[in-house]
Image (cartoon, helix red, strand yellow):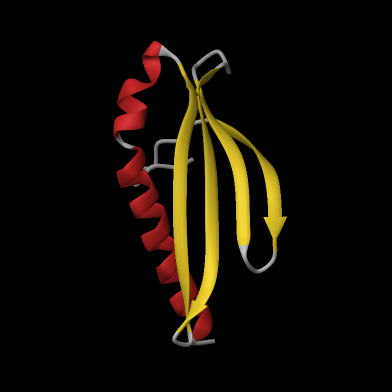
Length: 97
């Protein structure tokens, strides 16, 4: 993952379920400097048509964590918010093409 300041935070992940165009389920883990997972998150993203637009719901649940995970988990909501804002901006430019 790349933060807004350009810092790269090493992560790994695995898709658990892909149901086009309804749902994505995946696990992801942030890695420490030695490549070990600090925490693991199960993320479910659902999509539904609502009044001619796409409604997206994201749920992220921490399923494993270490003591060093706390500061990273504290920023998880802000990180997802920024990611979804960037996605919305990208989709907006592509829909105009």
